[in-house]
Length: 75
Image (cartoon, rainbow, N blue to C red; front, side, top):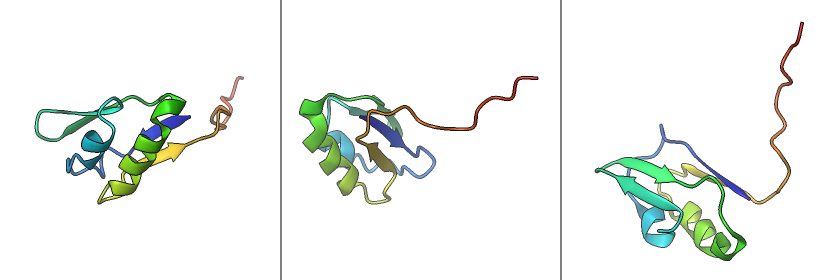
């Protein structure tokens, strides 16, 4: 499981911090800090935090598969 937050979209409303304080934190007034990986025990809190984001800046990926991206070109 992993977490992605769009820090450009985040407005610092901190709903995620209130709902999942072990995963999210605010640094200063608006800088969001978060742990991209979280434990199964935190799953419900993280899901609620993502759903509560007023600007939908949080994406939760529940798969354990690595991200598939563009393969680097060697040559």
